[in-house]
Length: 201
Ligand SMILES: [Zn+2]
Image 1: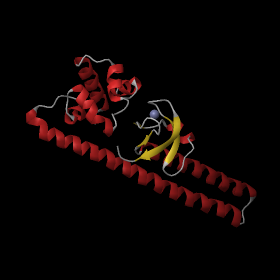
Image 2: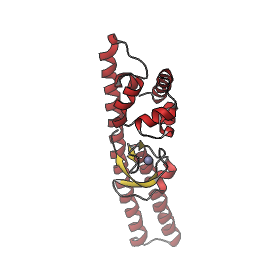
Image 3: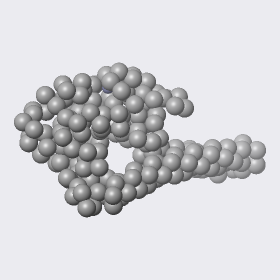
Image 4: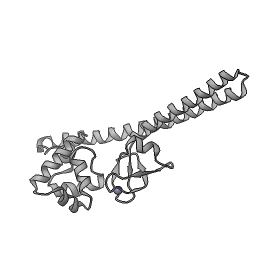
């Protein structure tokens, strides 16, 4: 999926239809900020919005995902390419999600082992402090890596407007979270809430 190409295509088609960003946004009952995000390649339309968007722009979903009007002769091939792209993206997200979970598990075991060594084994104070420092460093590195992987895996759904978005890493790390939800500010409507995690688009 070439987000930038798709964005330029949406902008071009919208102008050809004589619509402003505001008018297109109103037709889809979303904010004009969301339309601007798509057009600048900073986000893809949610699957639920694809059909109404294509209808408004007078294109097919295949055209939209390809970021261009697909020639009838190439239609089948392009549709298959688009489908494979979507599947690959979802697969990569799942892989990152599993990797993040594995990384968290290894980190917990390593930190526990180091803390156990520091508290059980007879060591000079300096060595004990060094082992504890290593435990803290391992924990921080492991959790950082897991968070970075996890943040890239899939996206979050805003409870207010239902839009999907990928949070910035900074906001992601500091956000209060449970297993399936995370407190984030939605870039589409600006509201902060417990956003549900979605692994696939
Ligand atoms: Zn929102």
